[in-house]
Amino acid sequence: MKDKNNSNLMLYKVLSKLNAEQFKVFYSIFIHYWANYKFFISKQNLFNLLCELNQLCYEFDESFPDQYDNYEEIRSFCRAYPYYFIDKLPIDMISKLFSEYIDNRIDILTKTAQTLYEVNIFAAYTYANKTLGLNEPVDILVSETQDHIKYFS
Image (cartoon, rainbow, N blue to C red; front, side):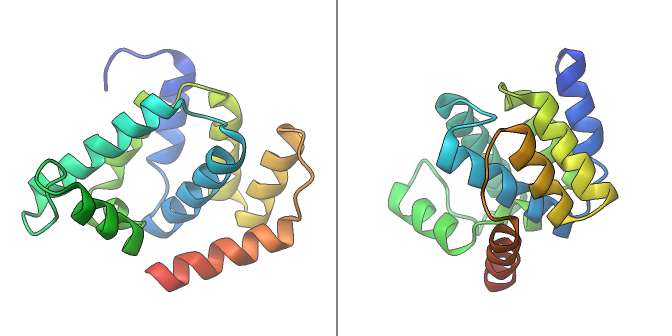
């Protein structure tokens, strides 16, 4: 891992403990708060993170669409398999990339991941909502996340 500050290192340590199923939940939580509120990562860093994940997936499995050959093919693939990189790459590698690119409210995201790891998805969403000053229905978030992961796994 590149020389990073303590917050990024702490995020890496927590993320690297997650198993694949937990990482899918973490990713769902992360994307939910980014898509709806633009928390945790800048648009450019998200783009760079996804490009690196795509490239690594292609290097690990040449049947994976090359992002530089056909944009529509990679876009279609990623929509059909939103957790593709978690199924193709080692969690440690994914954790390093996430911890390098996350650039906003790292402490909240780290604690959310830690809560997911130590307790469960409900507690993770509850912590994130409360800390981010949101009042979203946690029961619905949990149900939608679980259904989404089940459908796309």
